Length: 249
Image (cartoon, rainbow, N blue to C red; front, side, top):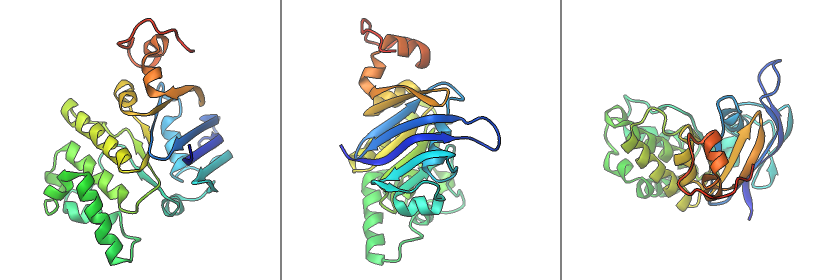
């Protein structure tokens, strides 16, 4: 299966400190959700910073659609097809939903293409269509996150990077956000997801990757990781619902 995003043997860190990522590799196939889980400090958010062009790796390669884009900045990564949705809320509260979404299309000059992308995100995220003329600040946290998702899809990216999309949301809004992540995937976008709610994220994802000390500890189909009792005990806050599966760690 072709990968939209590949990180290969990445070594990365901050300043003169020891590297956070120490030979990390991951493949994000087209039309799949890949979830990164692991303890605090494992390097999950650093992976997204490298993939989004916010942090230049010390070693290794970043490939988008097979093209080597290692070391390019955020604007170049966006042009290559990588869109990043930061943790927390990044909508402009005093602007309308329409204005927020159109900010994601500032590079588009073709009006016909712009109209096509607007129609697409309204179809994928019905709340965006319903609240198109409303001030973004009047929306709930979960609705604001959908506006951020819609904005990230305006340039038709190959892959979207999601950093803790459920942060600060109540359980109902969290469920809605994960439903929308699946809608993104079903619309053809590859997704690389970092999420504090590891069990919920793996229930949503197609593939999972467990980080520990800057390296891949274990990876595979998300359903298999969820069913691994030892993995559940170490990283998911308790044993999964399907006991009796032999641990793979």
